[in-house]
Amino acid sequence: MQKQSVFTSRWLPFALIAPQLAVVLVFFYWPAAQAVLQSFLLQDAFGLSTTFVWFENYKELLSEPGYFASIVRTFVFAFAIAISSLSLALLFAVMADKPLRGVGIYRTLLIWPYAVAPPVAGVLWVFMLNPSLGVLARGLRELGVDWNPLLDGNQAAALVILASAWKQISYNFLFFLAGLQSIPKSVHEAAAIDGARPMRRFWTVTFPLLTPTIFFLIVVNIVYAFFDTFGVIDTMTRGGPAKATETLVYKVYTDGLLGGNLGSSAAQSVILMGIVIVLTAIQFRFVERKVTY
Amino acid sequence: MVENEGIRRYVAHAILWIGIAVVAFPVYLAFVASTQDNALIANGQMSLLPGGHFLETYYRTIFVGTSGTTREPVGMMLFNSFIMAMSIALGKIAISILSAYAIVFFRFPFRMTVFWIIFITLMLPVEVRIYPTYKIAADLSLLDSYSGLALPLIASATATLLFRQFFMTVPDELLEASRIDGAGPFRFFKDTLLPLSRTNMAALFVILFIYGWNQYLWPLLITTRDDMQTIQVGIRKMIVTSDALTEWPIVMATAILAMLPPVFVVIVMQKLFVRGLVETEK
Image (cartoon, rainbow over all chains, first blue to last red; front, top):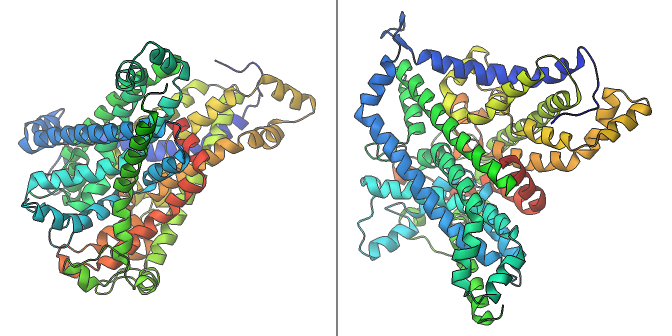
């Protein structure tokens, strides 16, 4: 699609795009290219010489058991966060889509956590579930749970998933609500006239019509779990205990902090880029469908 | 549709209240903790009702900071976060609206190349290129500076795409009409396009402000001086690994202060917020 009527100027358009182009080239393309280049280089221990080693860094990285474990862990986190926050959000959205008294207030009270930053979400939950002083930890102990996320890796993982999913409910709620509101009322009425009970109506009419929204949200939630959980992890567990909460992004961060292996760190970045590009491509496919729907 | 309508309605109300409780409880607890005595909290004796230390804690949090360490008062962190969020939001809107204007309303060589160069940035969040970006920021001596905090986060295409989509819907007649009135590209932009884009800009501003305010990994890397810390980074450093040393009332007061501005924006500008969120995700 193109505009028929346009301005003509030799220099003006270039002046207009110059600021954005400059920022994008310096802070996006240059570092991305650096990461790709670095991932093919091997630096000696003193940083004096570098050699081009092709895929050596990748080979080494992928044969490292810790890296593989981190990939699996990240996907487990992503699915746990996506499933738990999506299902809760869907439940709340279906309820808030009904013509209830005060429904506007309910909606407002459910969407504001979107604005809570991941590290703050982490701080809130780590405080409630702190083994020695947390209010919820006290309750868990009374129930007979041996709660100590500082030592127990699975409990630490649960902590991270809980805080991340909690923060994401409002986002999913918002998009589910928008999706529900775009379904014409006549569809529901037709199903009701056919004698379908509300539960059946939901699963046979509403849910199928929501699938574009659901697919879109699954991708967004996975991307969220990959990247935005960094703040949650860093305030709650710092990747521990014994790397039980070290996701891919957290691993890039800690490996880089230790400053050891530049090549490996770059290779990790490039693999992450690959994952995001695939996820974005999937998302674009579904978004296109959403538009034609 | 009248089948047990009454009962269903009660169930819906109940579920929504449970949802609100789940969502609000951690924040309520943080507020309660911020008004209580640290010794009580550290002993695990925290009460579930607000205590009497509200003014004292918030005064210390904003103007003094935690004792023991050399951390800055949270007032300073709030200021840094505010500058960062505003520069990201305004900077991104400014450079994006200009480039979208060029791409839609002008014909020039490499127009589509430029569009794709900008478009591709949509794909990679700053987290995946964090160390190379850090190195460039260091080379340009942007560490511990506001431009260093903001610039790398401005480098993305969301806003450009949004403005481009919107500009495409502006009818050709408008441009022709202002041309007949003798308006050049500057006047058309200032008198016609900017006023038309006001809602879009506002919606975008809301989203970008929250995005900027809540940044974490990048500020964590690029700031080393305590007086350049943003509030998200500062709060993490207040949690000392050995529980006994953490001043929980101050940590919780900081958490409350950290969420206040963006939550306020979401609640007060809810319409713009929802619009911005839905538009930028398309």
